[in-house]
Length: 105
Image (tube, rainbow, N blue to C red; front, side, top):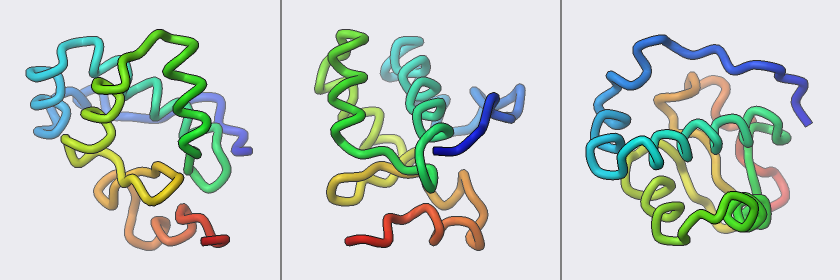
């Protein structure tokens, strides 16, 4: 588990073209889900989260499976690999990205 107690991000994050499209299509519910997923990843080993963690989030926050899937797959913000989600290359430096992928696959 990472010991991140906060996520450093730009005050202009919502101006990122991908996030602008997400907000336009999904509204603030989608934008809030994006940040919830970012918080989840910040606390996860190697900045990855298993699909089981997503099922728990979905149940706890009464999220629709459709919304969760759209936010994960339609905006270029996350990479979904088998049983894991992780950040896209543009959110991490190329040097850091390989360490985020699970080694056990």
